[in-house]
Image (cartoon, rainbow, N blue to C red; front, side, top):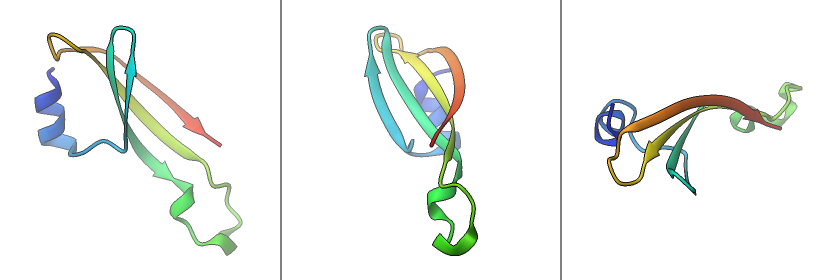
Length: 68
């Protein structure tokens, strides 16, 4: 998969980060910071990150995680 195809399917990533082997596109699939303050739920963010080779623009790997 290339970064162009991913952009066409998912649109603009929430964050873009550079790393030693290329670039990471991070998409939130859950954003607790968008919930009302009185919801009582933790304001964490769940994400999926797609890492691309900077030269070829092909996908290197996919990861997931969350920010507190």
